[in-house]
Image (cartoon, rainbow, N blue to C red; front, side, top):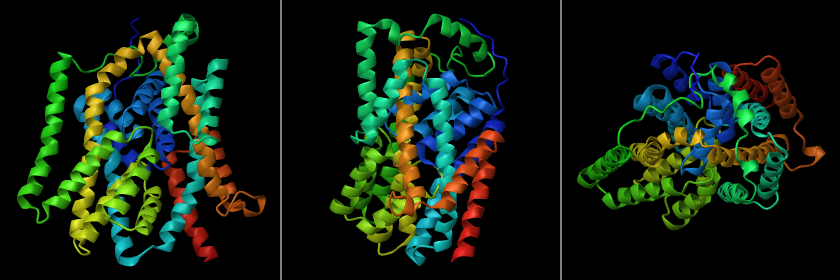
Length: 442
């Protein structure tokens, strides 16, 4: 089906401004990042349709690496080719890297700074509100049939009560969908009448399910070129360490460890963090257990993907190994960030053309629709997981309820729904609220 686009493509400068802003305001983990991107890219600017957004998200959730950063890279690539994808992916990470570098330096020089934590404590209830809104919006557009609701509920029960990983839930959902595809195909394939009804809505977006991907030419040659460039970028810093570094063995271990980590980060950051903590603390002795715990806290207070905590590990590894050197700590942070996120760009640039091709396949679209339904249940679990710690910091009892956090969360949700308050303003208001609350209660 050919559908003419009515929405104009944004200029590269306009998109660049958004990606830059996104890097500074993307709080709340994966769900928060997706909520902010969906609110801006789909609802406000109409740069990408909801169907294509969710379809791309489903693919990104199967890939290793941070889903939201890869989703931003994909949308940037769709809008402006390789330069757009690079700009979106890099700007998504850079702000959190610089913020974490500053916080890491303050941590090793001065210890924990109470007023900084107080400001970010004011932000946490607003982040919960953002995630609640994301869950509502994704649920409204992903849950179309009773089976979708059953899958969402099953995913929630699996992760909430049985503590199954996101990877297992996604794999199980795909398995169920494939089985139903042969047993009861009509449950999986997209309904033709529903597709026709959605066609008019798709016309209002620049990127919709009928938009062709920018990649062209021989797929194998393109893949070989992309892999070759990625390998060259991987080798160059490694060679510099070999020629110039005073302790090549240390840097070699760091490069290999975080490259390996990048390829096993499937199912969300929380699936790989225990692995990183176990090896970096217990086997490599890069940092202490308390420093690792403090690193989680620092990473939670910064925008960007939670996997950025690996950059903190790299900083502390360089700082501790070279006798308290801030320069070596900074080099460790930069090295870790580079080798953690380099494979993410390869995964998207190599696999993104497949995303557009599979959207018009009704069976594949139906299978991935099941994944989206399951993700709704996962977001509900994340909402309860984060909300519990924010609203009940000392244990889940009515006596421990933080009424200040509850009121700020409800007010934030009201402002987002009733007045469609810009997330940037809400984040600024919440940081100021946290600082003011600290001054009045200390």
